[in-house]
Every structure is written in structure tokens, then in C-alpha cells.
Amino acid sequence: MKHFLDIHTTAKADLRTIIDQALAMKIARNNRPKGAPDDDQPLAGRMVALIFEKPSTRTRVSFDVGVRQMGGSTMVLSGSEMQLGHGETIADTARVLSRYVDLIMIRTFEEATLLEMAEYATVPVINGLTNRTHPCQIMADVMTFEEHRGPIAGRKVVWVGDGNNVCASVIHGAGQFGYDFTFSGPPPLDPEREALEFARAQGVRAEIVRDPAQAVEGADLVIADTWVSMHDPQSAKERRHNQLRGYQVNESLMAKARPDSLFMHCLPAHREDEVTSAVMDGPHSVIWDEAENRLHAQKAVMRWCLGV
Ligand code: CP
Ligand code: NVA
Image 1 (cartoon, helix red, strand yellow):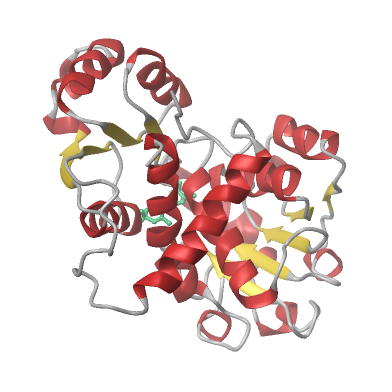
Image 2 (cartoon, rainbow, N blue to C red):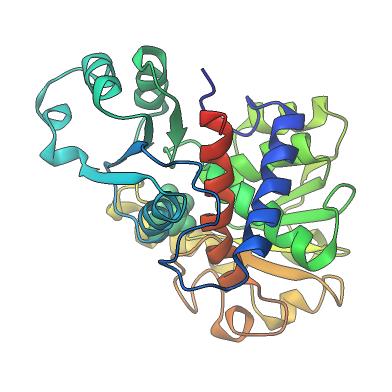
């Protein structure tokens, strides 16, 4: 069973195959209308369940459109409207869904929910974000970097802000794709130690530099994300803003990175908090390509899962 649960638990060769296929599939579409089918229809006859226990714009729309372009059908389910949200176990839900659908994508809170779904499903399961990681996002990010700048191996990637779920997957990506990683944020919001240790064990640098200006020196890619994630209590908002105020990605910070550095943000963004509009809409930013590439990268992930 080929689940796509995380970057660090998927083989390096498979991750590379997926990125290369995503790039090839994007080129093959040659900007045809979004609803037009791909020439080959690798998901013809396949049904995909998309389960959301948290809000989503990009993940929801990109998976749905991607499946349709490949000839499959989708069913978008909200956790609260399923029996899942009313006491049925994850294991039983997984067993039942596996009798109806060929692939399950789930966005949830606890990583344990994703892992239980994968353990009991008899069809592939894809991680569409948990409190801990967001692997589909990093596939799109690597694809986007390589489209613009060539191989990401050996480059310097700097994360500025909260060491959250997306950050953890970026760190896993350092180990698997061979780029160096620097985190810059306040100590209470450091990324998880296991992710940093995983990256270091693969032979890349994975370091923490508190001063953002020093951290972005020589950066090929600077990444920001929201200061308050969906799983964080809203009561944390004011404290987070006070902790992170010095970690805004603005033009003066980007000026300290390499002149040809790129800026990414998984979106949704909070303009003038973690990043200024001048950076989001400025010359370093590739955020719209990054968002588009969720579609292409996830299409390749689904093909890999299903072996089609
Ligand atoms: N980046 C991302 O996953 O966006 P959504 O929350 O809109 O899916
Ligand atoms: N860190 C953010 C990412 C949203 C796509 C969150 O979990 O809310």
C-alpha cells in the first residue's frame, strides 16, 4: 500500500519521481482550460474521498480539480458531517470508506488520526495537513523552486516565524531533497527537534539562527507562514504577535538574502503581519506559482499512490 503520509517517510527516489512527473504533467497540459481533461486519463473509473476536519481553499480545490483532470471522481466530506465526528472510530471509518472509494485524502488535527486511517484503510491515504506536518505543500514548494531556479539540492532555505507543521515538512524536505535549512524564530516556537535531527542525519545543515537578518544571509529561498495556525487556540493570537513581531518578512529582510532569492508562503497569508504586501507582490515572490503547483504536485502524488 503506497500511502503518502509524510516527506520523511517516503523514499527519496519516490519523492523525486513524483516531482519530475508533476513537472512533466504541468508542461503536457500546456495551459489548456482548467476543466479540460488530461490526454491520458489515469484516474478513469477511480473515486477519491477528500475529508476535511479543518478549513481549506487550496487543498480542497486543487485535489478536486486534479482528480477530475485525470478522469476520476471526487467526494468532498467535512468531518463534522460524518459519523467520524459523532463517535465512529477512525479505524471503522477507514474500513468502510475503503469499500466505496479508491483513495482517501484527509486533513485533520492529530497525526494519530491520519496514522489510524492509514493503518486500517485498504486503499492509499494522503496527508492533506495535520497539526504536525503538511507534506503536499512541500512537494509543491520544491517543484516551484526547481521550475524557477533548477535543482534545490545544495541550496539554502530559510524559514522565518513559527516552527509549525509546514515548517516541519520543509525540514523533512531538507533531508530528502538535500538542501540546507535555517530556522529563525523565537525559542518558544522552535520546530520539533526530531525533524531537525532527521535532516542532519541525512547529511544536510539544519540550524537555528535567532537573528532573522543573519539567518537570511545567502538564502536562496525564504519562507513564511501564518503566526497562528488552525490548530492553535485563538487566545494565543496576541501573545504570538508579540513574540513574532520581529520576524516579519519585509523588503529590508529580503534585501539581505541573495539577490535572486525566492519568497514562498503556503497561504493563506496575513498581509502586514508575517509578510508585507511589498514582498508578497514583489519581485522575489513566487506564491501564485506555488499555489498552482499544489495541483500538479498532488496529481503526481495520487498517480504514485495508485501506481497509475
Ligand atoms: N496551503 C494550504 O494548504 O492552503 P489551504 O488551507 O487553503 O488548503
Ligand atoms: N500552518 C498553517 C498552514 C495552513 C495551510 C495551519 O496549519 O493553519
